[in-house]
Image (cartoon, rainbow, N blue to C red):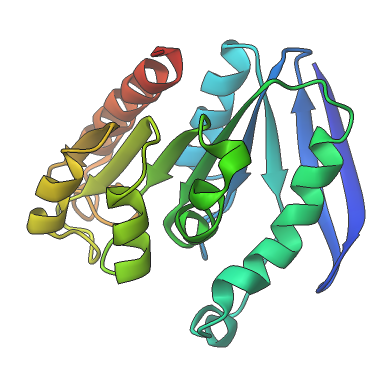
Length: 212
């Protein structure tokens, strides 16, 4: 496996990304949450699952403060950093399948932009703790034709049982983790239960990326 770290020019300045290459023809772009980086369990093990399935992975290293995240144009701000990376990775034409995986704030560009683009209509979307209390995010997922996975805990501030029930009618695999918070951790110190929940989520991820 090759690990290529690269910096490119974006509208907001220089943006860096890490490209894990197994040599396959599928690629998964990953978008971190606000305080949840790529070294945290959900991303660490999701990356391993992808690579085990011969799916290359890109981690995009953006970072925004809380004031920026509250701006109405946050989707455009994020896409101004994300689009140059996607273009740079895909420019050689080596990939014929794309996937997108986002956690929390990282689901904003997926729902508000990438899911609406014709070139990614066949892409699988992995939404971990999506911000479904935001109408734009919820409505985009609800009206999409994409296959993928949506995972959220019922102790997550963005959990809404009525909205989850509506989203269950989509093509997404829906996994509600009982007693899990926004990090998909269970309880304050329940390590074993949290690890078991993570294990189940990785099984659901494997199911989602393996389905046709």
